[in-house]
Length: 160
Image 1 (cartoon, one colour):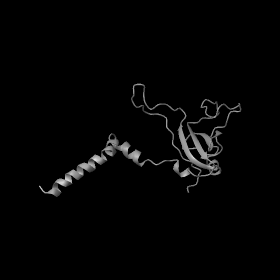
Image 2: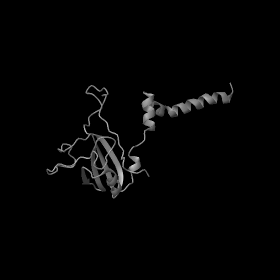
Image 3: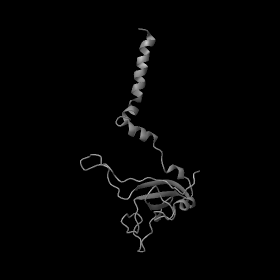
Image 4: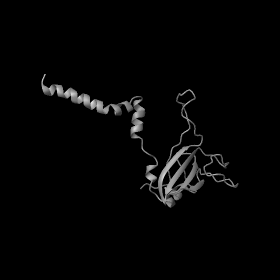
């Protein structure tokens, strides 16, 4: 065997060893691997917009609170995302509890909550979750099926 012929398998083995951490992370369901690798962030088109732009698209928030760098606006909604007057929940007339409380009584129905984090006047992040947040695992460690989930968009925001 020539020297070149023995070098090719050695290079292939080295490449495989270098890729093994990546390949091991891909083990399991190929469909979920593709989904996770290609999943887009639905909040990305709105990051960097001003508070005025967001309120024009989403309406008045359910609640708001100041942070060290700016302000958080909380929206309650059902469907794809907050829209003015279309799924936002009006506050109770009673004195508010902590803005962090999820046990406030409110009128109307809602399935999801979104928190818009502003730094200064610009949107820095959006997090969203179902109203009934729960673990995705059963007590014995199995994955639960049919958990509540939320989608997110601001249908009234023009694309940039």
